[in-house]
Structures are given as structure tokens and as C-alpha cells.
Length: 170
Image (cartoon, rainbow, N blue to C red; front, side, top):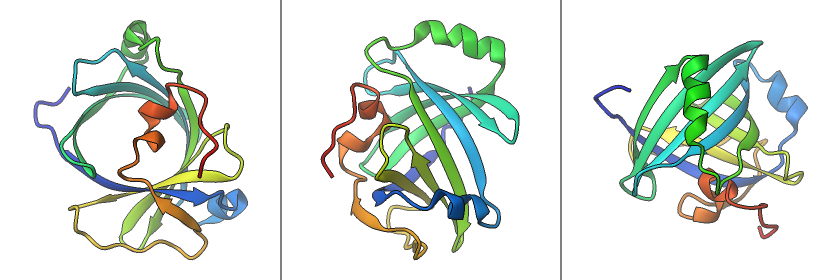
């Protein structure tokens, strides 16, 4: 892992399920199929592994996050080998399910918006936008229908979604 840990700042929104055909047709879109597994972590930190399939290529990523505010976290992330990934899976947190999702990474108005589509929801998805600072302004495309911002709602964090069958409340 890198010794210098950058800060990730992002806002998160619950959105109505977008038109997947439209998303796939957008210029510059990247589509990633992700299997995300949480690891047993020390208190105050969140460790995960991702197997990411994009355009036929598979990569493996380990991330350790430590929250510093509602919108920001220290994030230490690096690509690892398949062997390292398989070895790290031995430390999977048995109290959490693996998360499967398809992520659409879309360039829009000087940002990359990421839309996560989960197999357990047919009517909604999660949109994240990474920012340079907590006060940075941004806009979302008109084909996105925001239900509500969930940046500070722990129920919509992947770690919480991995704990049980997701709830139906919007």
C-alpha cells in the first residue's frame, strides 16, 4: 500500500433507475462489473477488495478507508495481483455479504459521475460524484432523477448494504 494517503471527497445520491441503454451509449462511458468483498478491519477503518471486470480485463484492488467527515475519508487504494487478492479473501468479514454491482463511470461537466446499479434494486441506483473539496459545486445530467441525497445516510453505504438484504424504504 502507498504510504501517502489521499483524501477522497464525494457526494452520494439515491436516484431513480436510469435508462441503462442510454448510459451505455454515452460518449466516454466506462462500464465496470464489480465484486466487492469486505475484510475484517481495525476499528475506525474499512477495508475491502474489489474484483473489477472492464472491457474483458480483470483487475484486483485493495482499499482501506478511514472517515474524517460525512463527505470525506482518507483512502489508501492500490492494485494487487490475483494471488494477493485470493490470499486476502481469507480475511473476509463473514458478517457481510459480497456486493455485486455494475458501475457506469460517465464524464460530465468536469467531473466523473459514477452510477452503481445493484441486482437487488430494479427501481433505483446510487450516484456518486467525487469532488476536490466539500464545498465544490457540480451539476448532474438531466437524464438523472434524484430521489434524495444520501451522503450522510449510513443505510446507503456499501458496508451497510453488505450486512443484510437491502431495505425497501426510499
